[in-house]
Image (cartoon, one colour):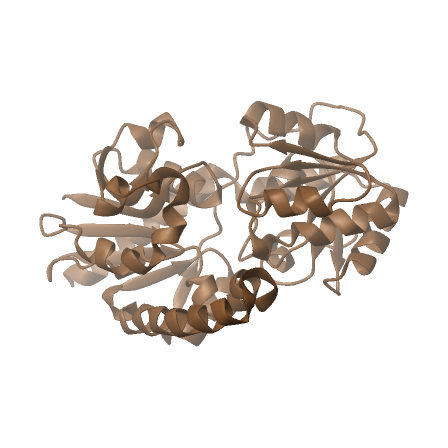
Length: 366
C-alpha cells in the first residue's frame, strides 16, 4: 500500500508537526507532500521521508513569508499528484484537507482546525486596527471566497479526526461533517520534572501571531508585577516588544532542551488565547508546572481547575492578572499535575491513529 502524508507547511516543530512526526514514525515508507519545506526546521524523523513541495516553494521569500501567498494555496494543493497512492493521511490547519486524490484512495484528515482566519477568527488577523478599514474590507471579500472554497471541498475527505471535541464542533459547524477525536501527542518522556525549585516568573511558549493573545499576558503580568519570559517568534513580535511594559524578556525560538528547562523553573505557564487544543499546557504539566489558561476551547479538555492550574473566565488582562496572582499563592501538587499529562503521551497517539486507519481501511474494503 502506498501512503501519502500531506501537511500544510514544514517551517518549524509546533504542535501539528509533532503529530506529523509520530505519523512519520508509524508510516516510515510514506511520502510527504507540503506547500513549503524549510530544510532543517523539522525533526530528522520528518526530514528522512521523501518530500514533495508545491510551486509556492520557489516563489520569492517563500521560506520566510509563505503566509503572504495564501491566495495561491488552493491551486497549489490541488496540483499535488496523488494518483499513485492508496491512502492519503493529511494533517491540516489550512488547505491540505482539500487535496485531490484518486477515486480508489481513502483520505483521512487529522484536522488541527478548520481554517481559522477564514471562519471565526477573521478579526484577530484582519481587524481594522491591524490593517486599516480599507484593508479589512478587501480581506473580508477575499476570505469569504476562501471560506466558500474550504466548505465546498470538505467532502474530499472520507473521514475526519479532530484534535479535540472543541475542533470536532467546528468541523460539524463549518463542514457539516462528524469527526472522531484523537488528542495530539505530548512527549512526556522528554518533558518531565527534575525537582527544580520554581522561580517567580511566568512563561509563554507560543508562535507570536494574533489569535494567541500574547498581548493579554504581557499586560496581565505587568499588572500583577510578575516577570514574564516569552519563547517564540512570529509577525507580532515587533509590535509586542514596542508595547510591552513591566519585566518582559523575549527569547525568540529556543531549542527543546532550553524550553524544558524554562518549563521546569517557571512558577506558572500561561495560555491567554483560545486554543483548538494546546500542546504547551500539557508540556508544562508534564514538567509538573501549573497552567493559567483562558477557559475556552481546548484548555477545557487539558487543564483541571484547581488541580493542574486555573481557568480564566474572561479574556482581559485584569482577569488574567488576578488568576496569575491566585496561582502564585497556591500550592500545587507537581506529581498530580504530571500524572494528568501522562494520559496524552506519544505512544497513545500513535496507537490510536494506527487503529483508526486500520478500522477505516477495513470499512472501505467491506
